[in-house]
Image (cartoon, rainbow, N blue to C red; front, top):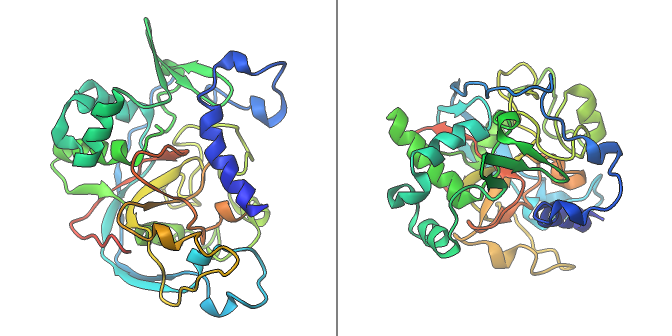
Length: 328
């Protein structure tokens, strides 16, 4: 069952590329929840800004002692063990990057400027002929946003978070850093855990087991609980932290290399699930998306690791920091 949740997330990106006329009949229920905006009118995107986060020590991972014993809920082998790290103070974007914010990168020639891209990313861009995000469809009158089962004019979609692969996310952040004159980059797994533990009153411990119980404590666009696609970047505040979509809406690209925790053990029932991918080519995504359910929506989850060109329901959150550990 949990593996099928993984397939749901990957397959959804394929479904989103099907022509709209491939869907027969009337799509109702949660599948029709692809609202334009709260007032059904074109709206501009809210201004994104950096929020200061204090330095701290963070420890995460499922207790390794539970790996082969009685467990209350499912976990992949890569989630067992522990990792502890001192996280330096950093500033983090209040919201995920919206289509409007990303549009500035596009309009400034972002897809035509090699210096913003890694060598591998620029090679992917030129070989595929990519000129804009995958789910922006260019028409004679401008861009339209492709959602799961519908399209929206970009004037209604500017406040929605942009979906990119990691290559595009890194290039955008490099461009943004130059514009602001700041040391910007994608966040790390450890920094995401710091954000995840900020809202203790509204959210409780990130060890909460039952996702239904979590949703009773605060809203998040996940598990198709609200929509069948992403929602505007300022709709789901994480408790009273002033940050949005720390959990849900879109996964967040990180720079953290997929690596084992201290105490990691191979699951003998699936020996090649993790170990072939513990290398520099694969980085983690954190936070869950509108698609995520079960283990995929839990803070422990580390099953979202992909190479730079892969597309998932993932967006961009950037941080300002001169410190970085790719294995944190």
